[in-house]
Image (cartoon, rainbow, N blue to C red; front, top):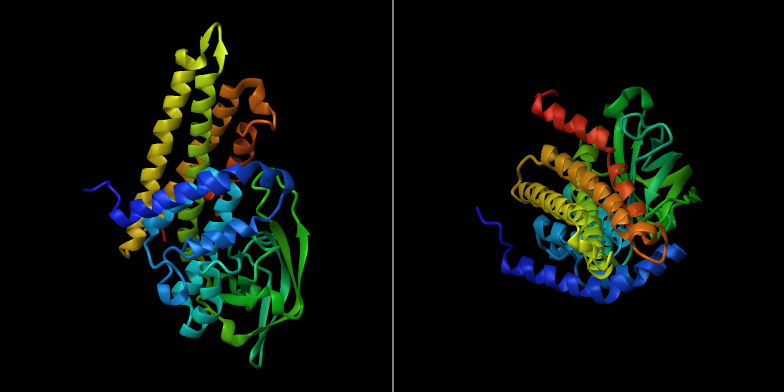
Length: 382
């Protein structure tokens, strides 16, 4: 068993770390304050191959593996959680289904621009009545000739306000349940009947837009169907497994930022005539943070390794996402505590980390859903 990265993986990790420290981290506070989409950062990440890390080079990806993807995404999220989730969605929620289930033509037309970092992609699953119950979709896609006519509203779609392309989960007939689900690739900039609805005001990840997508007799070519009708739910579940690794990596990166900032502050802050790191109460908080974040990283790397080797990674992805987000939330709360009164103020990063961390326990499947997935695999329930 070798816990060391390959030479290529280490090179990528070091490259991303330098870029994060020089170009992302210095802008994180401004991005959070202005809610500005970090387009210039996204384009540079694309040039570095990080918007399609595990996408083959013939589709403008980097042609690397998912272990490298996890390492890179942890670093990006350490610098800015919003940049992390935008990168994650491009790679996993959008990139994975198009790469895995798309035709050659679909990959060239709809995967390459996103994997190359020229435009953003998104995945439209959630509705007001379909979140954890992903099979309860009401967004309807009716085939008429060579066109699907789509009607419905999608909620809480990451990058939905800026994305060029979308993988849309819809149903041929709600009465069919999961058997009626299909996935369509939608060119959001060139689809009659599509519009952007509400853009949510959120607690955290403020530079990542979260939008409502509205389809009113929207016309989508039948050639944009991923796979076959009836295969959509299976595609969805597999895509969510891949996406959970990405969100776990985002959470882990936030956790590393919390630890990094807490260590720096605690070594400078003095009380009773000495640095607060001399007090056992602070030492134990830092020790717990470091231990749990390292354990989360190991779970993520294991899940990514399983995916790279074509093995079942559903349980491990759920474990990694659940654990990474839970320990990062604990670390963020303790980070605010270490900063004391300053931790409650926007002059310091601790409060931003706490706001950013919370969503990782909710999206890409709540942690309650992750526990259901893990238990089902343990009990071999089908």
